[in-house]
Length: 50
Ligand SMILES: [Zn+2]
Image (cartoon, rainbow, N blue to C red; front, side, top):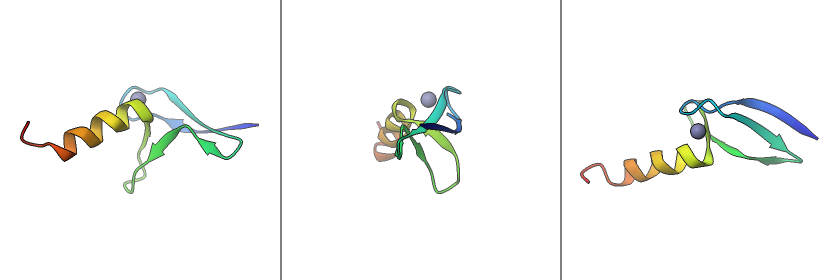
């Protein structure tokens, strides 16, 4: 059972909910990202200077 949640805002990959497991991230701004893009995004946020 999988449910389409949306597409990654960054790479437009489709993000699904698989048996209750969400294979992406929904931000508080209600934007969907896949794990790969979210990881890059959060690393950038943690190190704005570098
Ligand atoms: Zn992505």
